[in-house]
Length: 490
Image (cartoon, rainbow, N blue to C red; front, side, top):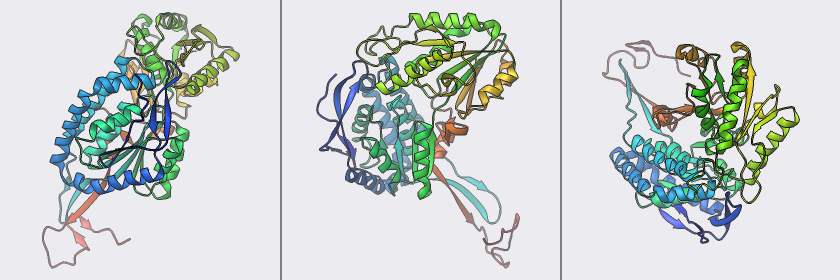
C-alpha cells in the first residue's frame, strides 16, 4: 500500500495536519511508502491541554467509560484488517501476526471496559475507605515491535478504564498504525480522551519533560527507560516501564527434544525475534545438546523468510536496517569468539532488512550474544552440567523479564522455575498467556510496575484513603479510635 499524504495527528478529537513530515519505510523493501506528521511543541501542548480538559468528565462517568470502551472495541474490530495491513507494511511481521495484534487490542478494550476497582472498607471508628483514583493525564510512549498491541491493548485500554486520558507517542519507525488507531477511536470517544502525536526522538523528550502528565508509561530499551525515569523524577511523575529482557529457556535432563523443539523455536523466532519476552538464550544439558541444536537448525533451515504480505512467509524482516546490523554484529562477534553457526548466520542479500534465523552453539561464557538482548533472529544454545550452576548463570543477568523451564516432570520444573529471577516464568511453554487477564512485570532492569490484568489497571491509579468518623463522641477526636491510639501528627 502507498499513502503519500501524511496521516493526521489526533488532538482533541480532530485530525491535525502538520507542515513537516517524516518518511516511513517498508522494511521488506527498504523504501519509503508513506509519511507521518512531525508534531511541534505547540501540537504537543495542544494534545496535553485537550487531555487535561477531557479528563474530569471522563473520570466522573463510569457507565459512559464502559459503554464507550465497548464501542471502541467494535470499531477496532471493524478496522482490524486495515490496521494489520499497516503493521505488516511498516513493521514487517507476517500478516496473520499483525492481525492478531489488532484483535488483541479488541480483547483488551472489551476486558478493561467492564473491570471495576472497588473500594476496600476497613471497619472501625473512624471507618477507613481505600479507593483507587485515576492519576489524571497519562503520556504513553510505545515501541516499534508491536505497535498496535502495546499502544491499544497494554496502555490505552487500561489507562482509559481507570479514568485517565492519554497522549500517545508512537515510535517514529512504526507510527502509522497508531495514527490510524487514533482516527478510528476519535468518533467513538469524547474529544481529548485519546490523542495521538507522532514525530522524531525529540518529541519523546518533550513528552517526558512536559508538566501536564502525571504518569509516564514506556515500553522500550533500558537505556531509554532510564532517561524516561530521570525525566519523571524531576516532578515525581509516576512511571510504568517495560524495558525488555534476556529470557532464558532451561531444558532439564529429562526433556524430550522432539516434543519441545518446535515450541522453543517459535518462542524465539516469532516476529523475527523482536519480542520482549521471546526466548533469547537456551540452556541444555550436555547429553541433549547436539540433538537440540540439530532440531532447531532443521527448523531454521525450513523457514521461509520474506515479505509479511506473502502467505508463504514464516518470518519477516527486521524492522530497521539498524536492528539488522545489531543482530549481524552480535553473530559476527560470537563467531569470532569461537561459536559455531548451525543454521543461518548472515543477512539475506537484496532489498529489505532480512536476516536468516540463526542457531549457534559452542559459545563461551561472557559472549555478547548470551549476555545482551539481541532482539532479533539469532539464538545461542549453551550446554550445562549442573542445574544449580545454570541458575546462577541465568540469574547473573541484569534483566529479569521472563524465563521458562522444560521437563517431563512438571513439579520438578516448577521448583526450578521458582528459582529463576524473573517477573514471569513458564513451565513447558514460553510466551503463552491469558491475555489480557495475566499481568506482566519485570524484575531488575526489565521494568517498573505492571501491565495487564487487575494489577496493570492499578498501575494507572493512585491510592486515595478516606477516614470517616461514624459517630461524634465525647472523647477528643484524633486521640483514640476503636483500633487503638491514632498515629501522632507528622
